Length: 276
Image 1 (cartoon, helix red, strand yellow):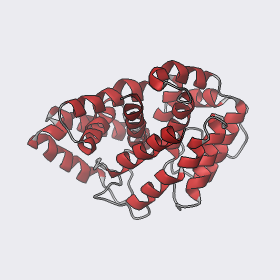
Image 2: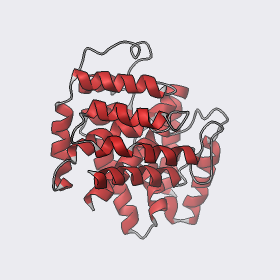
Image 3: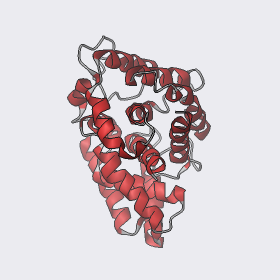
C-alpha cells in the first residue's frame, strides 16, 4: 500500500506542476494558493492512503483532508481525494490490473457511515462552490450512502458522476488521452496538458458551471476543443491557442478555473501509473 499511496502522491504532483490553462501550476500561482500548497498537499495525503487496507473509503477521505488542512490553509485537493480514495481502495490487491470491476464493487459497497465521514471532510475542507452536496445539506448528517449522495449530485458535479459511472471520464477519456499523447512522443508534463484539454473538451467543468453558469462552462469546453483541433501541445498553432486560452481563463476571481478537470486529470495520471 505504500507503493500505491506513493503513486497517488506522484499523480497529484505531476498534475499540479503541468502548465494546464487556468490552474495553479509551475508557471502561475493564485493570490491565495501557490504551487507549494499543492505539493505539500500531495505529501499530506500519503498516510491516509497507506492505510487503505484498514480504512473504509469515507474514513480515508476524512483522514486525507484532515492531514492536508494541518499543513495548508485553503482547499487544494478535496476533489482529488474524493476520486483517489475509491481507486486506492480498489487497488488493495496483489495485481491491480483489473481495477475497474473491483472499483465498481467498492462503490456499490459504500455505506451511510462513508457518507458521514465524507460530509465531515467537506465541511473541514470548506470548498468554494460545493458540488457534491447542496450547501444547505452539508451541515447535517446524511441518511443515504455515499454512492446515493453522489447519484443525487451527478447532474451538476463531474466528480459525483464518476462514482455513479464507475469512473467513466477517468477510464474512457482521461487515461486514453494521456496514453496516446505519451505514445506520440510527448513529455509527461505536456501529455498531462493534452489529457486535461481532452477531458475539458468533452466534459464542461462543473466548478466553472457553479461559479459562472453552464453556458460559460460549455464555452470553455468549446475553446479546449478548438485548441485540440489546432493540434494541442503537438503544433505551433495548438500551443499558441493554448497560451491564449490560459490567458483568457485567468480572471482575478478565478471564476473560469477548470478545477474539476484538474482533479479528473489527476485520477487519469494515477490510473496510467498503476496500470502501465
